[in-house]
Image (tube, rainbow over the protein chains, first blue to last red):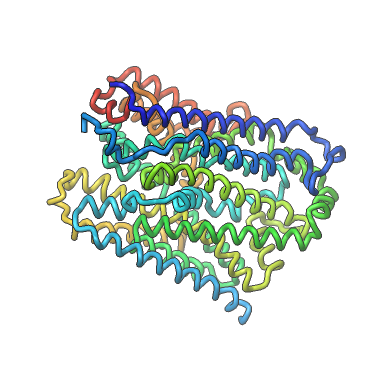
Length: 90
Length: 492
């Protein structure tokens, strides 16, 4: 059977979600571990150590905004009841 | 005594509100006059969740006592590194809803699935899979509920000064009654209120801690003078090595796609718009609560140093920094986190017994053998009895259940992750693979934990999931593929 259009949409959206997830992981890892681990060299932003500010605060705010943008522009509304599609094998 | 009353009053008002919602939820299931209609209402709220409710239902079930007490307690001990660890949970909501949401919702409607077990039954047509899933769910959920009850009662004791037993009675009875009476609809509506409560509680305490410490910069200076390593991602005494923290990307990262208590919510939302909104709202809220609560723990060390037991950090900060009235509001936060975790598990245990086991195996899916009046009284009774068993267990916790709880979170992932994900996305997945993977996964998780075997410094969940994936794939190639009619329903 040919894949329904709805499932194709769902698969596309899943790929976007996994992409965002990997992006969040990469940002989390890179910012957390690339500012050195000697506290006496730390610089501070808004009172927080630099690594913490970028990975925990910017990371969180950033992914929330990116997600909102992706959902707003790339996610399609579908009819979950499938009344319009008229599946033959129901 | 007056102080105590001031603290208890907001809490009692709050619990009364929750009860009111449950009674309202009850009017919906009362209207249903057929067996399947009742079950669809009582166990999945007739699939009517909107975006905000769905978001809150997913994240409040996920956020438990450990996010409000245990986690911040560790952050108090080891510093900012533990906040980094907690932030791994930010994508919880969008990952679960995004990967499973639309496909689950469609397939659930095609197969009339109400529970995760219904979904597994439709996909694999195997009694072994169904029974393994039901047993795992009942055992791990009851152990988890017990742990939540104990955590809640202890917290209540340490903040209000009333006895452990009083605390247990107050919120234990509340959660059992409102879940029994109101079913799934009451569970998710109260979850919404509980989620808002958690947000308020964490903002209030974060504000109190920051101002008591004289601002963030001051607090960081103090922390540095206590121990500079409190400011590093590796934590005080290098307690958070990389393989350890990376393991959490499995346990509380993508592994949560296997947690039935959160994935089940994907069966119950109204339309795709609700799903989209829930992803955004859920991510924002879960990140906020995690960040705020763990910051409270870590920064609390600068404000009130010298608390020996980590679990006492948040209660102590609350009592010392907040007025009784606000402390009363605050304690509603973690209690809300606990109740909203317990209620979902309770209603799912009830669904497993009534629908997945009794209705299917004893009534043979025949509504005449389980008429509406009977399914109603049976569902209420089962929900209540399961709750009461856990309640009494919490009075004098049996060591076996406490021990099982240590494995509940990872154990559920070991059992449910592969059958759920492969079942949705892999055509070849079949019952042989599912059965073998569920059993070996669970056994491996216990084995790695008990023998304390660690592969490359990771925690037990990493090799466990790897094994369950390999066994699933191997088993699926050995066994026969599922019927084409089944695969068509699943669009594979």
